[in-house]
Image (cartoon, rainbow, N blue to C red; front, side):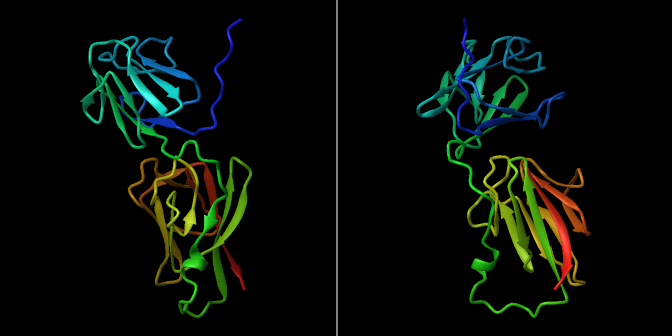
Amino acid sequence: MALEPPEHATTAYLVIQESVQQAGKRVELWKDCTTIGRSLDCDIFLEDLTVHRKQASIVFTPHGFVLRDDNGSGDSFVNEQPVREHLLNDGDVLRFGNTRVTFYGHEGTRPFQLASSRGRESKRGKKLEPSTSTIAKLDLSSLRGVERSFELLPEMSIGRSRECDIFLEDLAVSRLHATIREMPGGGYEIEDYRSATGTYVNGMRITRYRLIEGDVVQIGMSRLTFKRSSL
């Protein structure tokens, strides 16, 4: 009896960037061997007539994920270079026919950590403006059930880099994903920093947005609810 391939402790995935039907689609890499092509039998089915029925495979190895050209015609590309076999790095752009796909995974084998805030620590020892009668905060919840509250300072960065004020360990999050800042009138706005997967408020993708009470910000798997409360 055939056994199912083991699920790996990794969150490596592909995001289809250029495709008429599938742009923005995210595909998790959880199998030992993930097949790619125009055949419906492939694990990743690409609706692109310029793609071979069985184009390529992504194979999990002790060294990481390897792209293997299965058709042998030399038209599987990584960063616009034709490859037969190539060890993938985070951010590599794969091209099959007219379809471009980005690989994310350089932190894929790291254990998940709770979201954390460097906001107060990074500003420790600095003089802050006198507080007003209310404070603003982001209440975080995720698909993992983790919950945490972040008190907002005049400006805070959000992203996958440990240098960010609000650090999110999630490969769907860009290293510097977004910034939230206080506005002159006392409100707050959030601005997306040209992230790969976007910043959403109440289900709508935004570039810059002024937040109001109860707005839900979605970044990767994390949902952050904007709230204001009296001191």
